[in-house]
Image 1 (tube, protein in one colour):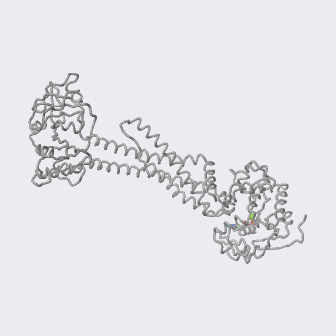
Image 2: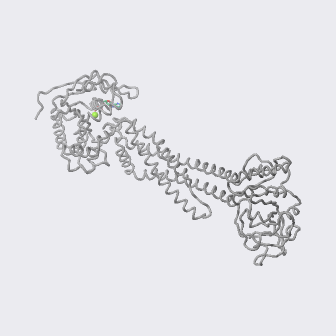
Image 3: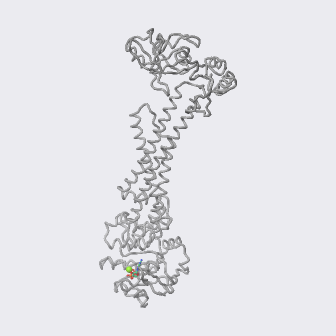
Length: 402
Length: 229
Ligand SMILES: Nc1ncnc2c1ncn2[C@@H]1O[C@H](COP(=O)(O)OP(=O)(O)O)[C@@H](O)[C@H]1O
Ligand SMILES: [Mg+2]
């Protein structure tokens, strides 16, 4: 039997039973579409999170107190045991490395802030101007803690956009006084609205000089040192330098952890990549279900077509030819359903994109290809039983309907 | 050349064994015109199925052109069926969704012949049964006699040496039946070996050799010097 004839015959039987064919196509299409939609959700989450991390700045390195065995930002990295604090002197020291462009201390705490009777609890960051440079924050108005440095507790502060709205309303905030804990600070600027960022919502934060934060929280220890390497290529060297310099200052004890933005990124990339693959796996179960449906419908169709199969065998069709015919049918259904499913999937994704423009729904290529291949493989696999049953038909019984 | 020796075919029905064919022995030389008669249930169809390689004997041997058919693999049996044997059934067995031409084309499709060749030989075969002008008609658009003629064209399109017809006129009126008999007798006179199972003594009597079966046994084997005109 010629290849084209086999296809033509299989196509002919499928188009003869359009209702049945449509049902099987639909089942396959829905499951392939499910794979596409679910993986695009996972992928959107991955892109969202990694983009957020990328937006933290470029060529970023982060030093945190405490030794962490993992390179990522797992919970372990927040546990400090009997570690020496990170200090402002550590910041001054790492700045000597030619591979480190900028270094800024960060202290974080929750403090009540009030102005003219309005009070609320906010996240307070104690830091310096370089922090803004590294994070590439822009100012809505004013300046970001000008000339503050790490030596004096200048009574200044910068507020996020939400805080400005809540505490100042329509009043111009620059030069106004704000009570931060038991201190009074003059507002020097308002940060442009940033939207929610990973971990830090600066719109709802107040930023004060690091030295004032040390006094406010009564602790010299830093929460983080944020550094920027001179270039992407010097990231490794910068990390090495930071480790060496701080270890030296900590009397040879490496009681802190330096992570690079890349390492954090790749950790999240990995987590969300796995999530996407898990979603693909879950969605593929529906492909198997579609395969089982194809199998059952084809079994029914075999029993309805016994006379035809018997005739083919009487006319000299071999077992292999009968099997080939039915497998071609199954493969047709599965791949056509798969292609339809890709169309449906992209349609649903287009709708999702419309509904959530901030998320980047794109089904990964491997999922598209994988869903197609899996659909075809399921079709073939679940076509085997009906095909064999057809091939095993006794032509006499089939023809006489005995 | 067909050679049967002590051929038996038993069916197990519950605890009972039905001897559909019981030690049947005979030879049929190439080109012979044989009618097979006998009461219903006497084993005629069973015999034709075995001769057509769709069924295997329970015991005994069936030698076709010098080859013991029990030694043939399934694929060899299928190929022999395709190339050497034509079938005509009482109920035609055309595929309803295919046109007359496409039905005739089927054996050539299975054989893997080129479309151009199929076109030529298929139309030729339809012309041979006088239906060249109906090649695009579906079975539902044809009369019983015409359907059987399409079936004959299909059986003959591979140019087999042996034509097996199981009550080919059983579903037809006398007129159409006579036309069918005329066509297959013409084929026989061109050298085809012809075996026709029939209930109709008028048709059976035309064959040069008449086999009569009773209860699975060959009861009579009559030769006629000359077939009736
Ligand atoms: N597949 C089968 N299973 C059981 N019994 C069968 C089968 N085929 C034929 N028989 C029996 O074998 C005998 C001969 O049948 P058959 O060859 O069809 O007779 P005929 O064609 O002469 O009417 C009958 O008794 C029939 O019931
Ligand atoms: Mg019969």
